[in-house]
Length: 336
Ligand code: SAM
Ligand code: SF4
Image 1 (cartoon, helix red, strand yellow):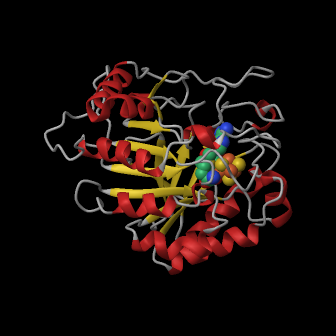
Image 2 (cartoon, protein in one colour; image 1 turned 180 degrees about the horizontal axis):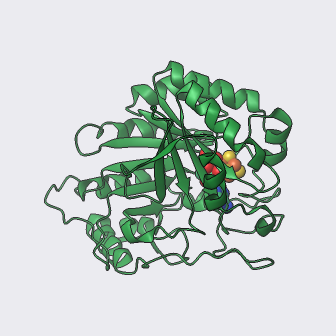
């Protein structure tokens, strides 16, 4: 079995989009229970269904051999998977050669312990989720989280020399009055900020419609307090970016509901079970772990080719009162 075939064909989907970005959900488990993401009582995957880190590494390295330039580890909370740092170290060896970037999205609760190891393995930037800096509000949104622990994790990341982008899900009636203050704090601390519309992924204990806040309205409000100039330097991803007050901070808006971003989509997602989802908003997938186990790299390539031909042109998220989620799996399964 070989995984270092530099002549392997690039990854092009049925609409001519070249895939350069792989997200890997290394676990569906988490130490928090954010209300828009998970129900309070979740049923997680049985351990027998979870791919080994060796399997995830082989699959990720196949994508890298075929032209993926950026890998993001996510979850669930990636840092609750005990052996995840082995995967970080293994994939980190490709940074600077086949890989431009290895990154992680984390809730930050365990960063104090892991920031230096992540940096030493080749990680240069992290996305850290922080929906509120207010302790009571943070506890409410996450159901039991301690914001001081996350802020300390962010400080540890910065001390280790990692760049930090804050992810904030904009929630009507929950944190909408804190968005300008969060941006001001990010400018002062030297973080970027990405605001995200709540997406209808998986059943949670509340109706997301009640909390949906269109980012078009948020942007209009921010325009009154900040000079926001469009920054075209995106990554082919879903976010659109603005420079804040002519400084270093970038504001990103991920608005799948009010602004479809699918035309330039360059990403696919690997789950902790080893399944490949080619769209966050569709249930269609291929079992890459089964292909690898049954037929090695050749079968893996065939399954990837098959998946790419069925990558949908666009998601069809809609937010409507009382409507079922667009897909039944949670963001934590596909890796947000
Ligand atoms: N646990 C890590 C964290 O919270 O950063 C990584 C996984 S989490 C699923 C990744 C990102 O997805 C977070 O920024 C989170 O706020 C966001 N997210 C989760 N569920 C979402 C939903 N239904 N709509 C929009 N964003 C969501
Ligand atoms: Fe956990 Fe991240 Fe989902 Fe919050 S958003 S419950 S931290 S996976």
